[in-house]
Figure 1: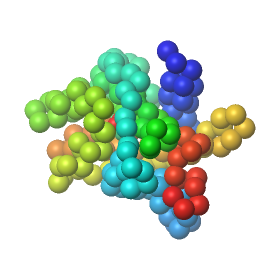
Figure 2: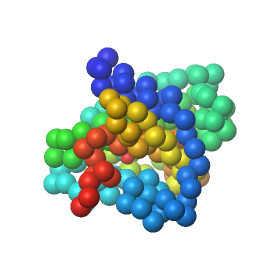
Figure 3: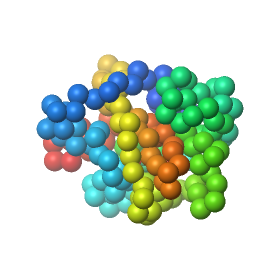
Length: 178
Ligand code: PHB
């Protein structure tokens, strides 16, 4: 396993997620990113010429592996775990880990297990009934720098998944003009 995956995915698993302080946060540049309810993929695409997805991992986990908060948000479910890095013009911007309950991977949604390099948001927000809720945020320390992260629940055809996203140091969320 690469250091990148080990460090960043592990940090997402161990993050201390907290409810955001909506009113002050939504007035800030970081807040616009963290509280985005529509597609993060679309927002990132607007900041580069080419957005690419590298799949770091794809595996199943038993329901007993879920944390209490993951179980509260998704139900007591075995899940598919998808771990990716998104890069804008070849610069790594975002590390994401998504838990997709097996009961979500049914009917029209079976293809979510086989997205490969297609960004999840592109697939999910194609659907008119897609929505996001339960947004939480975390601050993670890396090499003496605080990195921003968020966790949110996406619904498609009333079926949930849980997406954790870590904004890497060169992500537009930290840039003045981004
Ligand atoms: C993914 O393809 O798994 C993915 C893409 C963009 C995100 C999160 C996850 O913001």
